[in-house]
Image (cartoon, rainbow over all chains, first blue to last red):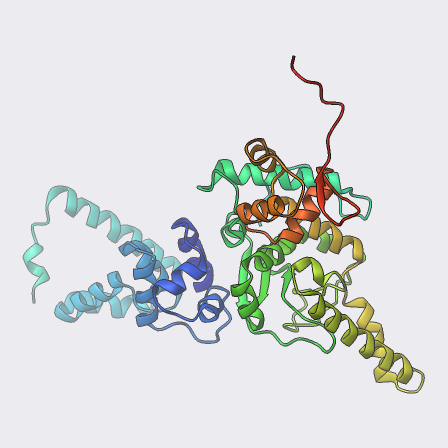
Length: 132
Length: 270
């Protein structure tokens, strides 16, 4: 889904009009309308997205959805990147994953997700290993 | 645009005003039952468009010579209402004009006018040269938007003069011939305009709600009741007058005063 469509979906779910959102953040109404109708060649900056997300009273998931649709790093991804910076094993995992085919990636993601669920369920004994 | 699951006939000039009224009423009732606006009036046309899942795109659009572009409807992305921000001052000063403008485009969308074979599928005039986006201009009746009479005349005269000039040049100038051809093509057929305009009025002044208000505030002779009714529904007095005339609730007497029509077939209770 494009950024404009995601924005429109979230805005409508909050029962706010384009005009109300634009007014709340002192943004030019036409500018907001252009954003929502995907009339810009470039995507909005994280600053702009955060302003809009604040006006719409977005939760973390909605904010990430907006960031993701604009091709910006989401909060979750940023946290993962910070973690990878601190943990060489995780960095290795990310680097290797780049070279995988989409099918392989899906397979690994499924396995890792299952392992992660197990860890959450039974408590991660190797939690300390997060730290370098 | 959502499919409201209403019985909407194929677009045609034979669709009566009563049918348009009924469609607008059903749509308004559906909106009231599903949205937070349980009262149904005054209509927030932007919220209504959102509920219908019609996009609104407001920007500054160029206007071709001889025509003003307030708002238009494009079929892209399931329906987009284009609003020309060049007229923002007018829209802000006259919200009643704005609501009828948007209501008019919602009317075109609901009555599926763009599906009519008379609409040239390759027509792409403005604001953007995109084959998925078609626009039509309103050829007449600026007055119904609530514009001052002088402004209407000015716009009509300008169009008329432009057309006359093109006719004079057309015999020798192929470009003028082409423009002349487009001049007629780019205007929506009159019946479409009238149906959409009627739809807008019916949507802004839903029949059932109007009768509810009239129960409490019965019509009396003179303009004052029309003005206060117009204020309640946040439409222009001319739109309210036309709605009441259409519903056969008033007539204009020889002194140019609106008079309620007494329906003699109603019997007294006792």
